[in-house]
Length: 152
Image (cartoon, helix red, strand yellow):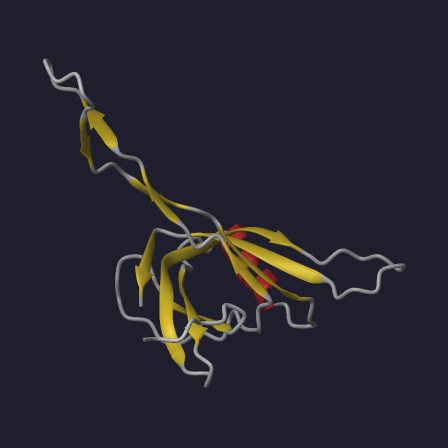
């Protein structure tokens, strides 16, 4: 029996995913340790088909799948990697898509399983809040949309 995994042990990495195909390798554009990843979600909208004379329920068929926006959070650092990627895309480099891989690590630090986000595109950047009275670490966020969620 496998031991349960602790979800606070994870790693996020990025690789190139150019539009129009072509292989990609590791990219150092977006780097850093993330404190939280949320929105790893896929949902399917089923299609109900009613049949004449069938009064007890309807036939259910597969419908389109949609994906939630994934939110990456990390403590504010001097590195501007998240902003650089968002800025590149916002200034016309729309084809600069990346594949994001989120690995959950086991107790020894080895990858136990991973999710891959295909053709990730940054859609929102949020800098950490500046407050002279606060004592907590500032957190910056990057919201990304993608075209597919896969077990890696």
